Length: 341
Image 1 (cartoon, rainbow, N blue to C red):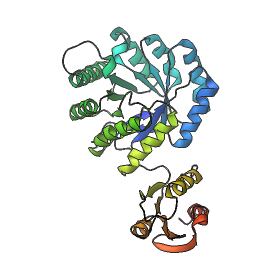
Image 2: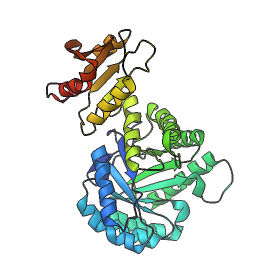
Image 3: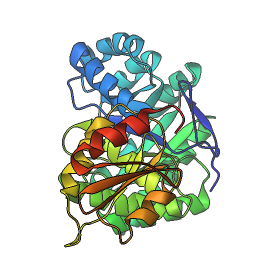
């Protein structure tokens, strides 16, 4: 579903552009060194834009310095205090507000200042902080988003991005579906408070995967408890599974069975670690035996299949080297790093 295009710093969002990946720092924003360090790690992981919390005046003061030291657009996240939003606008590329936590009488001032600095506003609707009202969470989320979009439009403002998040997968999917049928503003997809570890990744993957497969969504954040770099990695895994974007290699590996004569989990982990800084979008197959292995390896850009105690390295469908199993990882990495792949 093609949406309006908005410009976030130098990143074009919506309007048929690639789905953008974003994350949020969990550092104290006023700690410039820690925040910049984390953003640099996110940049390296492929993050397209980053959000920071702005809960106080000293966080606002840090924004200008942070913005000068990073390469991706900076987004200020504001709750409760509209004056902080007004102070932050000159130093960021986008503003995120939750209308349920900002007094309406302040919105016009915020919008006018955002307009003068040519930055978009994300209307962030969360099921846990909705304005008072009756009905289901989905109905209230969609109604709140529509009401606040219309309010911004009444001020002549249309550089709008919208998010409708719940911690419930079904609620979130339905809210985005309903909103996207009525409005063409770019959508920030996410499942709020998804959790940590595999549970958070699985919930987010189900939710975002359904919506993205339906053509809904212009930017995504996988909200996890922990290192935000994991959010970016998970986001790219979701986009890769849907063939929407790729950042770095795609590694496929068989689940192993009794026919496998090597420790394939260890081999796959070593290959993944060896390619940590390799960003070329190629497909790598790592297969444990001769049943499906050669076929899968032939279909990849480069592959490794095992038979007894030998490894066979394929490149563009042809065997290019046969090696002892113990030398297979380093040999495969050597072939991957060659410029002709």
